[in-house]
Length: 249
Ligand code: PGA
Image (tube, rainbow, N blue to C red):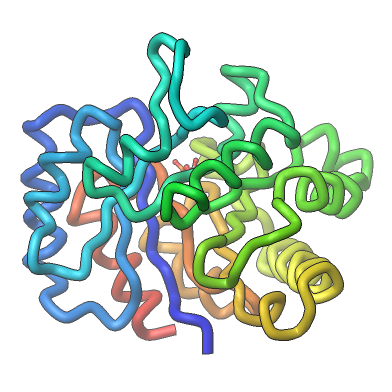
């Protein structure tokens, strides 16, 4: 049984004012039946951890440097995220791949560094619109999985997020058939590379314009073990029904 995960990515949004949304979220789900995670900006991690204290709501980072420490002005080490109370970190989000020219090899190194620090990593992959229109989606996904994932991992410390780049922040969502095709494909690749035990136990999230109105149908798709949610995770009133939909899936 894979434990379902509702993950929110606040991206570069939020100041201490927004902690009230976390408080509202924990109050709305006193005894959640799924794992809940919010990845706020790094400046809010410590206070978010305090806000989530004594509740299963987990707090994560959005990125870590591939090095353990050193002369990397403006970057954050995985050990710092862990020390601040984060339990997860995102790796290779498409906005990092675009804004910071991150490639699979870097993402694999970041993931290994985060694992070494004791963080769970959500490794993000997904095709662009051009790649989908050229019928290259599965090749792109296979390449990103092969390049971004370390050879050594566990089903506990690694989660995959399939996020079609063209669906992120656009309101466009793939059909459930398209989501199912890619999630089944990812599952088969994980089983092939890591064996039945790990491959069948790792969670695969869908991300890209998930909202309360489409959550039920997305969560009914095979091999969808939860969601990575951007815009609709910023307000408790938007994210809470998505959590409930996942609980009921
Ligand atoms: P979105 O973002 O839900 O705003 O489309 C998803 C993501 O980038 O993880």
